[in-house]
Image 1 (tube, rainbow, N blue to C red):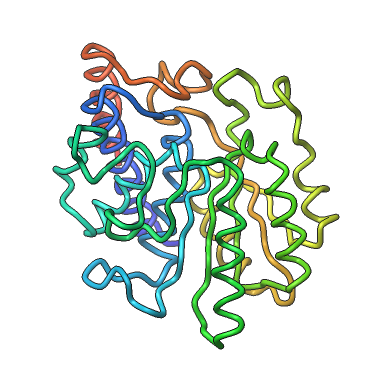
Image 2: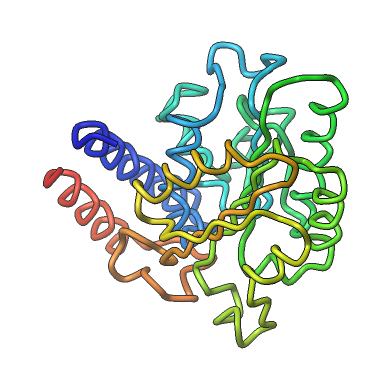
Length: 278
């Protein structure tokens, strides 16, 4: 990736983080930590990787995306808004009464959302269905799913992993956002799901391990995933919960709460200051 492209993407990632904070602050509730940790992955997917059209969200041959950890939707909404699926200003409607931007993604109301999610553990199964459908129909689209590392404690994740390998779903790429924290504390202390690499490999997956907050590593991982044949790919993205906002970083308490006015102003100032350096 050349320097100008990298700089442009870093600015976009920062805009996505700004939109995420804006949404959660105005909604007075939400889940900023995991949305901020996955900003690089989401931004790269929608601006570089996936075949999507904001003017035609239901395009038949579009690539599909499933936000399995649906509570992190402020990040997805921010990416969709900046990609042009709906106005960026609408992020301020997040979780407001009657708003289409609900606390979890709704495929019937939000342009660009391919699957309604929120019940943890189910997204990979839905993504498997999409990927298998493409295989059966002879379609070329790819399916992506973003999973939380805490979410991987759910047994259905591993049933879906077995299914995907059995059917050779090489058009499926799952990303695990390994920010190491969930609502009750460190993932390893709540219910240790590690080692993810050995487990996915044992289930028959191609495994890629990266720093998920490094755009160049993110880019290389998705390029590698497209070369894999005969098996699904998982990208284990090591990230920082609350990335980009100093007082949120690596703090489990920011899994699911909104900043107050003072905290909001600090977060926005930090993100704007970082953007100015790019």
